[in-house]
Amino acid sequence: MMSERRKKILVVDDAGPVVVLCVNVLQALGYAVQGANNGEVALGHLERETFDLVIVDYKMPGMSGFQVLERARERHPDIASVLVTGHGTPEVMKEAAKHSFDAILLKPFTSNELRTTVDQVLRGRS
Image (cartoon, rainbow, N blue to C red; front, side, top):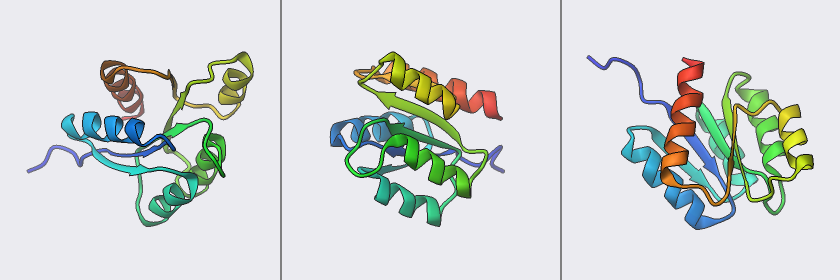
């Protein structure tokens, strides 16, 4: 008997290597992970599946991470969220606070920081 279903995580970043790193690290921890390289692809995943956590890059062509999160919450109001950004400016931080992200990871981050952040966010939600 499975103790609990695997948590599902959606990683959205226009930088391929970041998506690959996140997917590899999180899958190794036993999470079910999907990657998306832009907002449109992410919304497709969100329409088909339910995720426990979305990790979004702040700045992407087309749709920002904030917009992706807003759309994700329309479908899944209690989805947890982590903002990933290379732009840790006060403006971005203030905007992130408005969107009530559960955590913020500044790029470049280590796989250890990723692991710790995701564990804390999902543990806080269970």
